[in-house]
Amino acid sequence: MRTALTLYCAGPTHEAPWSDAQLWAELDRYPAPFDEHWEAWSAILRPVYGHAAALYRVHMVRAESPEPGWVSARVQLEVSGCTMAAGHWLPISWYIGSPTDWPSGLARFPEGYPKPNPTKPGGTPAIDRQVWTLAVRRSS
Picture 1 (cartoon, rainbow, N blue to C red):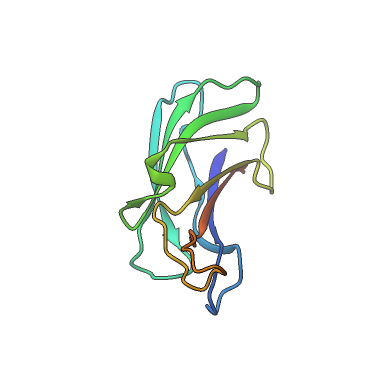
Picture 2: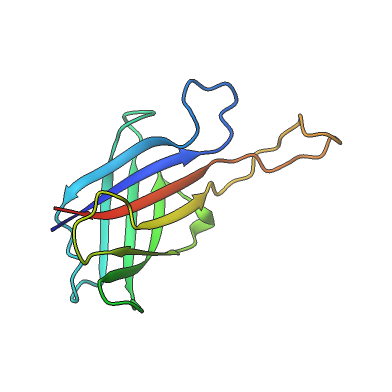
């Protein structure tokens, strides 16, 4: 069995040529060591869209899983050296009981820096940032 990861980016596009929730990077058919003995794992995802020199890195640390047939972890996402979600480790769980063609685990990471939006009514700056979504599934 293998694990597949996909990374999507959603949010304000400001006349950009891509649509919302665009696939940005993936790691397909990676033989990740997600059995009862793994403790920590890191991987670099392959860029699919955007700048080819961008670096998408995922770090995972095992967490206790409340359900049999599921893997639970704390996950952190780096995009070109910037840690998303202000450096927080977010929870993620996915089904490992059998291969699936749909992601069973999702973690959403807001970009870690606010961007002022001068066009907001009332003249007050607003946080204008994108959200990165990491999806995980087990594949055969």
